[in-house]
Image (spheres, rainbow, N blue to C red):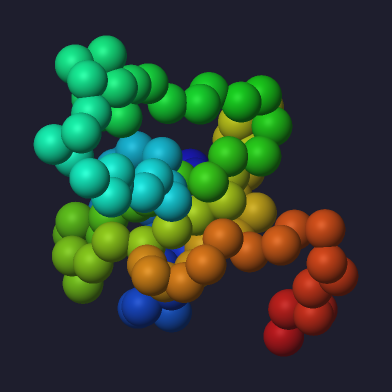
Length: 100
């Protein structure tokens, strides 16, 4: 069973409590009316699909119902970390403090 840490509930819970909500940190276009149909298509549907570290949005549907971001390794399917929505993308190259 895959456990996911909800940064709002501060708990590690089974993945059936959560729903994947797409790639994280996608910025909405500053001037949507200026986009061509192809640019809208790219904004709405084209996402990166990297092998390895990927930044994702998740929702705790059977708990607090809040969205949060996660860093997940797409090869091993392990979550590197989760963090609250609205926070900037974490720098994974910087050393992190040891978990308590």
